[in-house]
Length: 495
Image 1 (cartoon, rainbow, N blue to C red):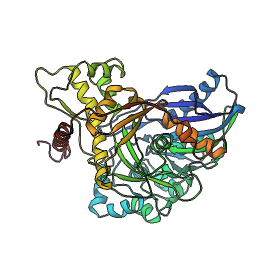
Image 2: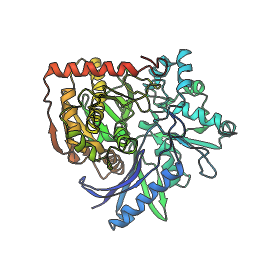
Image 3: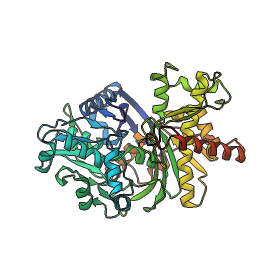
Image 4: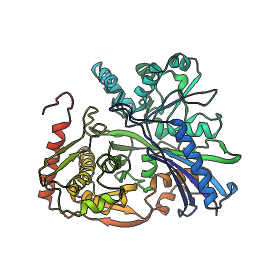
């Protein structure tokens, strides 16, 4: 039985996973990845470390599971999106830090473009908003701040890529500079209707076209790659959230999923490029035949990152997994509210200057109340996005499929069901980001059929809402007030 090798390159770790042709997970290796915060609102990584940890994962997962290279039918790559890397074409070395998707340093540049009236054009063509979350202003910052970078970019000496593109370049030893359509749609430079880089957007953001990679379908042949003499063919690439949507078998319009990773990301399959206030329209995937599939997305910048902060910043627990037990040790948060805007508020608020807050503290507040408020905050932020989807469609979201590391937290998923009123469905295999990469690769290589996601997906547990509708409505209204208090920070520092 051939194996499909999937790379899942995330914000806090790099991973390699082996899947059998029937969807069974056969092996996994993970390497931790450092994240740097050199200034408030700045988030950086070492692009070399991204590659080296990912390469080590490939070596280890094959060696630990005694799988020969010849047994790997295809390799797929899923990646943290919007993280921006620029490197030297001749040496393959990054010219600066990888600026992470959470980074807020270009907030003022985005505000200037909004003031100049550019947002409507950007939104119409890209489906996105003017926000530092996306790549375009990050590219501009790197070109302007690194001496000589802009001139070298104009001369064709430098390359830009999201992390999928960077890994492909390094693994192919500089032979292939390409990305997939789902990642390209997250740059603010790609017209999602004409499905090409947009010359007017390149001019608006002052990005030289020579920097950009070729755009291919998610199941395209991305060519041969080499690691220590071992050869693979990359037959699939996709942004992590689109890969998860595909693996969750959300193949029809109206199907929804939420991934609880470092952030939380809600995607709803819309079929075509529909729009909704406060949400993003993004390319979900293109399988190389006909038009691509589109999705509405709500991006929540802090989910698992909140749990990590409780562990590392406040020292509430030694392990992230202990937060569930701590939060479950109390029946309620006793009036404590957390707004988890540690790196701004994403969808549907889009307030890059917002900062996190703890509200409602008393002398009786204990660690457990803060832990429970943190899990509730993650669930409330997902509710924000689901409400925006429902306003746009006029229909309630009945079922949401959950995945990601925090989807193993039963309390979080029960809170999500209670506060949203939707059934939350957890699959047996929660490694859906990597599974999506494996599926893209298997379909691209011809070893899997296009409907393989429906064959691989299996339900493990349902979480049904328990709150009465009136209580749910009251709690969500109180949550909106809490968010409103801090949404305009620092313009209004004393609300």
